Length: 601
Image (cartoon, rainbow, N blue to C red):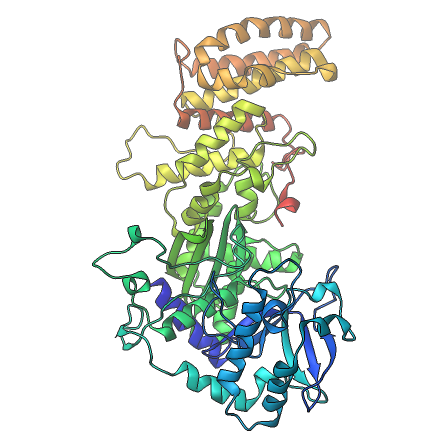
């Protein structure tokens, strides 16, 4: 299904002229050798993009028949300097063999051609001496081991772009000199691919690319079939899926079809009635996963989500959005020389957006830890990481590897959030004592979704409150509220000079084993209340004491010896609600609500 969807996407891109034709590939090229009509080298032209801080190679559609692995294999009319010119930075033990293979390949392909430009190129190869490269105008050491193409002086097109070359190359690619069989992707019978191109630009994978499908050990083979015969896919389908995937993985400022969620590189694409609707769907998904900083775009996204939440069809909110648009989301992660598929989701746009609406509702918390729509998935996953002391922020490098991908899968499919998400956040509460709004929102989301999706909800199951719920009788929630009030009493009694509160010392024990901590904290709070009365804060002391009493009345006769992980999540929610309640203003907002939306952009 996945390879078939990618192959179909390739054909749609090919019609638009966005991807190379079969037998060609978009490769990084840095330089061109300019030669005369009689085959003499003239100069080296730098083709790199210099608009950024560092020159970058440009992408060119060049002829290629297979990926180069450990063996020697030359490409027609382009290659790196070791092959094309017999020059490299290092010692190059195979240098002479590589250069000889390049010359032989060009003569084999174009030796019978009467095209004058190709004849000039072959004369260059016959007369070429490796030491000449460094004497040419435009040479720099940056050219070593870079990819080169060739151009005749005075012409605009490169040699590999000539019609004569493309005709010759098409004949080569159409030769049926390999195994034939039924393609697992298209179902058609034809020449099967002997290998698969490398997939590039997946974060953490090898810079040269990694295999999505490969058989490099007998352990992966079966039924006496060797290598790629274990996955019989036609040459056309292999080229199609790999070209389409490499296209949407490209690192390009204009490419909005890839995301980085933890260690998972996520790509997505749509299939709609026309290009306008497909691009609109892809644009909406990009905004959902990376909320815009522009106020107008943010307002538009909010309007769409609120409209969908009220049951309105997408087309009524935006004419370019069609709810029936088929949408594909693929998550890839590095795994040695291969790629692992973290998740693969196929759905229509309407259901996909509804899943994001559910995600937003599950995260809802008052006071809100952010402004506008919920922050990006990648930013949310960082909240599971430890907060670094040097800058006071979590880092994506510290996010557990598979957690980010599992969270993304939960969002786009509407299934339960990973249990590891709740476990990690509760562990962070206990280890660093940072009970932040975003972390609490994630706790609430996990618990709220589990309750909503539970197949056998009992009548005693309580909803997870969005805002402070003084009527809740859930032990974990009440204990969190109680702990917040005890901390409030301590702060009020000791003032701003307080270096550490009970949260810094006892939060972990209070949330996990309440019976071991709360009796002692309740004894100490009497000293704090007495201290407040001595400082003429009798009214505040009475209010806190009344609140503590009301919470204890709902707990029963004794404190529980331990709390389950779910109840520890409720503890954090109760603590957050009670802590923020004392800062509430008349309009219900919170003065100290954490405005962390800026970091999520």
